[in-house]
Image (cartoon, rainbow, N blue to C red; front, side, top):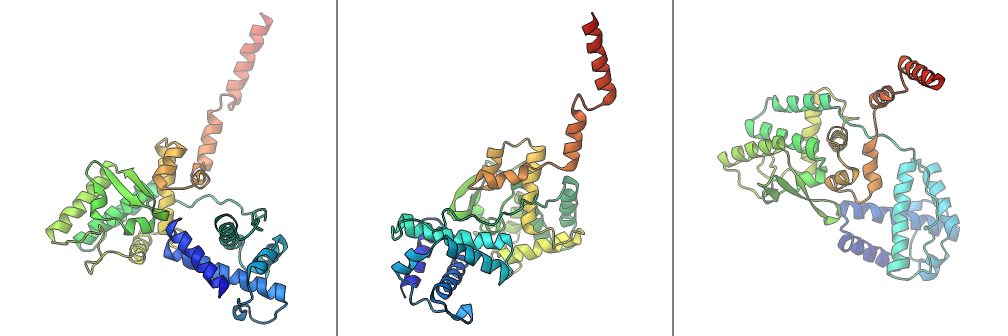
Amino acid sequence: MYIETLFDDFLNYLRTARGRSDATLKEYYYDLRMVFRFLVQRKEGLQGDLEEVPLDAIDDDFLKSINKRDIYAYSSYLMRERGNGKRTVVRKLSSVRTFFRYLHETLELLESNPLETVELPKIEKRLPVYLTLEESVHLLQTVKESKQQEIYRLRDYAITLLFLNVGIRLSELANIQVADLNHGQTLRIFGKGAKERMVYLNDTVLEALNTYLKERKRLGLDNDTLFLSMRKTPMSTRSIQHMMEKHLKNAGFDTRKYTVHKLRHTAATLMYQYGDEDIRALQEILGHESMTTTQIYTHVSAEDVRHMMNKNPLGRSEDLNEMLSQRGEKSED
């Protein structure tokens, strides 16, 4: 089938040239099949279940016939018929836009990208959810005092410190190899798109990792992957997630609100608030492609705003009145 061949070529392109993960590729494939089934149904006037719409009729002429009205109709369908929220619609349309950009710019099958000027639904910016400094310390204390075998207590403590100090992603942490640790206080991380970055580790993280590694060696645990499960095999992302959820729950946090990813938010926020981190340095540490993504961590709390307002030399009425009085006296002189 012609369109399926294009899908395969596109996904291969994303995998090799853009370094996209298998999970991301599955989402792209699902999004593309859905939008083209909708487009065939719309243009051919077909009825019935969208999942049953065949894609055999799609050819170059069909692709060239797709316009902005079709895409806006699809956006409306996602929201009204499938109940998708704005964020989901934006993600799905972004997948389709990338595919059409590939057809236009890479394969040169199309003279233009019909989605290039399509306006995506406006999404209200949300401040990231994160633990405060006191809450972070409480979580670390909970993990440190947890009642479990020593090797797993040390492992969990080191993992929690990495999340809270480095802002590492879950998938990145699961893939850390012992060889990625450099005794010069750095850690090599392979992020999204197979992009490599180097981050410096502070003394607290280094001490926790070294203590865990010593216990690993004492028990004769020999594996290239840094963090091992109770079966002595590399921990999966799901097992790390489950482990952190357990500790978060034991510390009294609502795991529907505070997830593993929120620990990454916490690290970024604490670095920015307490470490005087430059926004570009923070972008490098977190491995963000876009500065826009990093900027969500430059938010300030209500307490920060109150403090800044109170620090304004014109903010206290008695001080202002005194300054005005002094200026008045100078004017009379």
